Length: 222
Image 1 (cartoon, rainbow, N blue to C red):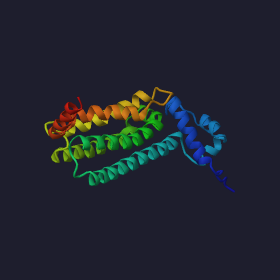
Image 2 (cartoon, rainbow, N blue to C red):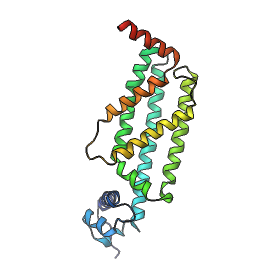
Image 3 (tube, rainbow, N blue to C red):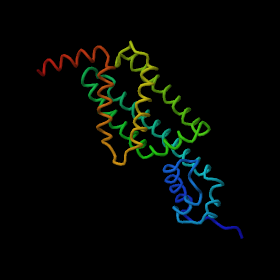
Image 4 (cartoon, helix red, strand yellow):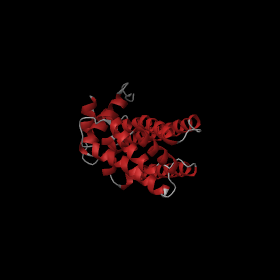
């Protein structure tokens, strides 16, 4: 009778593979070490995966799924925000936009923080592994470009800047966040990071009416 996989072994092996591959890289990670970390035999590993590459492929596919789901949820949240604040403008809208984006970006940053070592291992694994990441990046850049262009058309953001350049800036900033935090052991202040970046972004990208209203509000306050 063929051996049957033990309940829970698949997830234990995935977690062990994640730890070993993130620590040593895909090329240097060993099946025996993955199995030992999972608390099962090397032979039992092959009941679940043909190779360590197959285990890593499942880890990567789960990462892509989580990234796509987070992107979808953010787009839905942005549509709800637009419906709720469609009649607002000036500093009130900027404040609401900033608070909203800090909250939704925090979810994205939490996801990137949890998977920062997987992304680093993926980028180091070679071109055959990074095509999916490149495809996701291109889709994200297009979505951001279109989103920025729509805000420019509505007068919410300044129109004299190429939306594709803004999309490149946004994607590059978050990629830089992943690379920097991959070296950290202690979790940084993700909400503080998001607020700082978004404040800089909106100070530079606010439309003329919003900037003028914000300046008037500052003069009144002083």
